[in-house]
Length: 83
Image 1 (tube, rainbow, N blue to C red):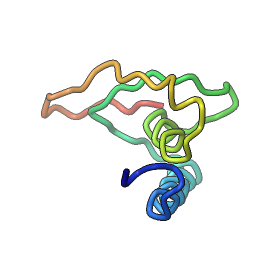
Image 2 (image 1 turned 180 degrees about the vertical axis):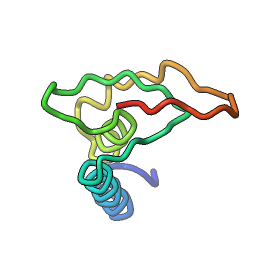
Image 3 (image 1 turned 120 degrees about the horizontal axis):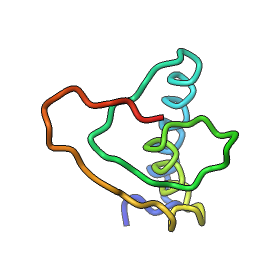
């Protein structure tokens, strides 16, 4: 119930995700994640898969149904950046 798209806290969380995405994009930064996600996104969208999937979920977008977690790394080694 807490993270349903119509909840005020969920909307604020989605706004924070967008701000993070803007910073990452504007500063050409990489995100390292233990979670590997397969998500269908338009070819012109350069958002990191994790942030894109999180935004879909938080906003209740229909594309959220197509989010697939493909693996989770338990390794302590430096994780590869996913774009």
